[in-house]
Length: 158
Image 1: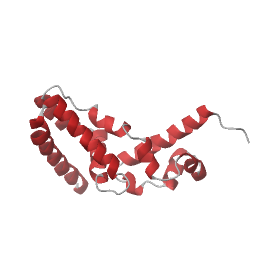
Image 2: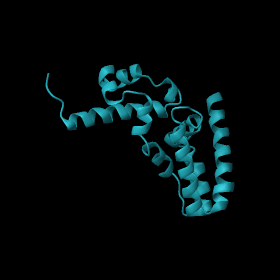
Image 3: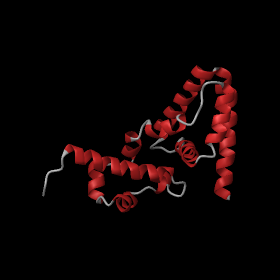
Image 4: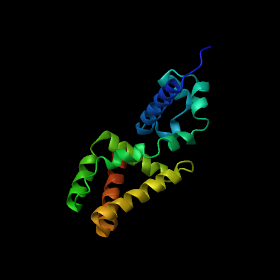
């Protein structure tokens, strides 16, 4: 059997992470229903091959630290409170933003991902306060998150 080069190992790892992102952003799958078997089917990589790169399910979240959070930040305009509010409302209509927000909300109470979700929330709050002020953090963000929760729950029921 030929030895795997570091470049091939990185490509394999990235293929696995791409499948993980697809699972996490799919409201029908998410973290809870993401399994090694599902990832094996999606990637064509053996279960052992996946386990070689990620021995525990929690390692997926650690490996993606920052990647998913950037999906939220890239959609938000933090140049002013009005721009922030408008960009958040528009972003909620985009499937990836919607899925990441749902992921952050659902993982805020999940024992494995709680540390990452909490860190992401705190980072978002700090960034909004730094860029837009305390009012945006204490007034706009809770209102927008409440609206987001409403939209998320209504979409599930539809």
